[in-house]
Length: 162
Image (tube, rainbow, N blue to C red; front, side, top):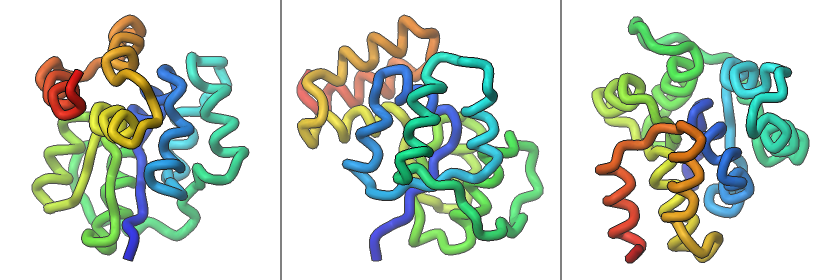
């Protein structure tokens, strides 16, 4: 079975900033977000990347998760992260989370969920020939104040020979 991909707000925002949202359907097919994440990334305030995010939802490949989300966590995380993890916990082997925040990733790791972050998506885009340079994408993120650890960036750059 192909894994369903659930993405949190931070990776959506980061990928929008580097014009990389279009990579998601090419890498993963249909991508899901909880309603809480949609509300977070489309606040209606003309934030950077918001227009690209609106287009992604409008195009149909970025889909709001419409099934009920059973609360399985009793932990203090952002509501979007919590919803993403709760969806994945319903069938851990069938989901891949795209999540950046350290606390959410720690919980996902504790529950043995599979996850990647924005940096890994950029690396996959480079490996699949969707972009010419992962380094250029990381530079755009850095200039925008989007935070990815230097360790993660260096690991991805080494894996794509940049």
